[in-house]
Amino acid sequence: MKVELLHITPDPEALIARCARVSHRSESKSSLDADRELIRKLISWGHESVLEFASATFLVEGMSRAAANQLTRHRLASFVQESQRFVDVRDRALVRPPTLTEEQWEKARALHRRAVELYEELIAQGVPKEDARYILPIGTETRLVISANFREWRHIIRLRGAKAAQWEIRRFAREALRILQEHAPAVFSDLEVVE
Image (cartoon, rainbow, N blue to C red; front, top):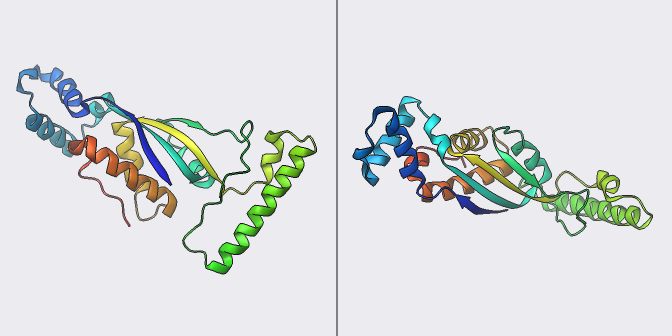
């Protein structure tokens, strides 16, 4: 799976702190250290609404449609997913769950190959892609773009990075968190994804 940052609010911590300071007219107290200290305090107090002023957008490639279905349940995020209705997806691989043995994986790959062959046959026989796609496994790779504000990113990472979360969605949460921590450490340094 590849997770690429497409866009992030410029100087997100400075913006968040500046917006937070409006409520107390304390804008003159701004510096990188003061901004980060303020953000950490706000998070510890549960005052996360100001985190909504910053956002990040990611391109995700190589995620299964099964994991993408979980991710798109986050209603406060915005999504664009590769369309199996219009895009020819016969080149999309099958995502391998780590729990499958080599023998099980070979059987899964054979089933996937047969599904792609049938998909191709159906299209050649005039069946629209939007109907032919029904026979493709849910483990087939997809591409999507996801955008959310920082408050929602914290929610997504806490939920999808938890021990109870599925392995593939945890992998996504881990990579998104790593990138977000680079750009806004005060906002995301308290979070972690369980291995």
